Image (cartoon, rainbow, N blue to C red):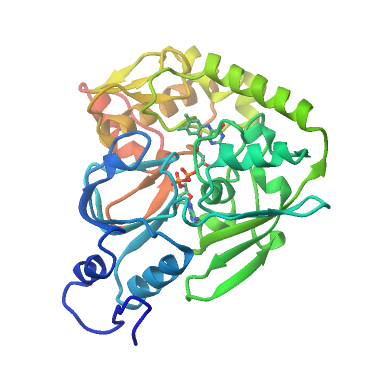
Length: 345
Ligand SMILES: Cc1cc2nc3c(=O)[nH]c(=O)nc-3n(C[C@H](O)[C@H](O)[C@H](O)COP(=O)(O)OP(=O)(O)OC[C@H]3O[C@@H](n4cnc5c(N)ncnc54)[C@H](O)[C@@H]3O)c2cc1C
């Protein structure tokens, strides 16, 4: 079987070389993941593929699936910790080419997964549609936002999603209703089901553009004041936990109370400005970040009895995504040369 660019779904010893030959501008071989993720961390991926259209995305995903090439889907990598060992397979990046935006008079919106979130929110504001202004400062793609149920001010984009259009793990185009998506705080079933999000549908309420614009400006100003100036970071590392919130407040406050603000491991540092951020001040490794995550989790647990969970997802070299705290304990010992302390699992 041949796909549009002549990709053959059978044979050939090196499928990634074949993919590169068919899509020379869209496929990079042996590319450091540090060039993709916001943390600027990560060893080489066998391939990073950035499809230039929804059509080539569908062909490329069909090809890698048929040929058994290990692959993962990412957006802007603003919530991913790539591993120092890189990734053995193809990282398929959903970029601006998978775009599109349409809104009707009743507040129904359909938008492509590759849209830049602040641009998406601005379009809603221009149309006087309210409900997603809280996401104005989130530096990722719309697909990543929906998968993560991202948002700010304790809100999540999932509140307004009515359906998601996906390429399923079986290679079918399907429309999943919100009931199938199990949105919860910073999570959704899309994190588990292997589907590629192509676009999402929303329902927003009508409001006033000028008021929404003022709200957006205030949110952006407050984020600028609060967030670290070092740009190589992945936003909040830990998700807020209701028990911790009642005891102390958000994770950043708990990490600060545990005395960890500014703690460094290699070039990774718990931000002195906001303790729920870990910044890369130079050549940080994923092992450094994971050691800090394990330390923060263990020390906050000792202080409060609450085991914080990471929002940031770690990608291992074999394609397994997990919340970063789940792989962090293995790195705990690196923080404690005397070996006296123990990490919580
Ligand atoms: C400075 C900074 C501030 C941030 N502030 C916030 C904030 O206020 N609130 C918040 O919620 N987040 C925040 N984040 C985290 C991040 O920006 C969001 O989670 C964002 O929505 C992730 O989008 P992305 O495109 O970068 O996804 P990625 O990080 O690339 O991917 C995240 C997950 O989604 C999956 N994925 C991405 N796109 C698709 C797709 N099309 N189909 C299937 N799976 C997909 C990936 O496999 C991965 O599991 C912040 C990050 C930074 C760097």
